[in-house]
Image (cartoon, rainbow, N blue to C red; front, top):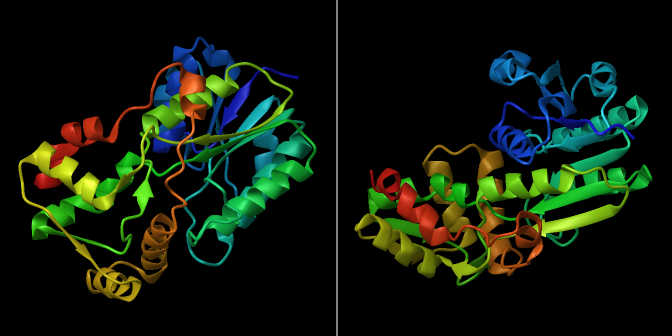
Length: 294
């Protein structure tokens, strides 16, 4: 099959990092195709000799044309969290378009154990994994753990008030750096592979909220009290802060998932792909501390 790699969502944070690490691993620009709904945002990649194409998951016919000539198609999950199955429809469109375009391998960014996950958007990932497996093509499914960067949504406001409200009740999370995830994906895709692989990409340790709060206090030198609340209290607080209902559901389900232990998985898959230990959360907090504390 062709050794070209199509990266969808190339204007997004993960997509750009995957391309960065493909280049760093010696994958030439001529082997990379960058796709986005807004290809005008990819001028910097085009200047490096990377083929830039419009790739809109809501336009299946055009998507098939965009994927033509690609050996591997990396489907980076979209951000259409509207509670109306839009994201699953988009992903299925991408899978079908890649098959029709003649791709030889599919890759996808999923989440750990989507079949048992309590996250509100887990069915999107489970349905996409099933669609990929039903094609019969070789695949690489990357079940990405919870990003360290997700703490950007919680800690600045928590430090502003001095309290971090949580319904996780001692549950642990193996936070992982987005950059490490991108490097692992690039490592797996850099060489054509006719196998079928599922990687669960996590951090090296699983910490509970109090342990994370202590790391954050050390990093900032600021006080931060962890306050345990119920799911209902957490949802009410988020709504009072103006968070849209669909994202309230996402954030509450994340604490439910944590409480159930489903985000505490630790594997060596990431380390085996990138050849080094994952970046520790303490380091992330030390570097981001000033921004968190205001």
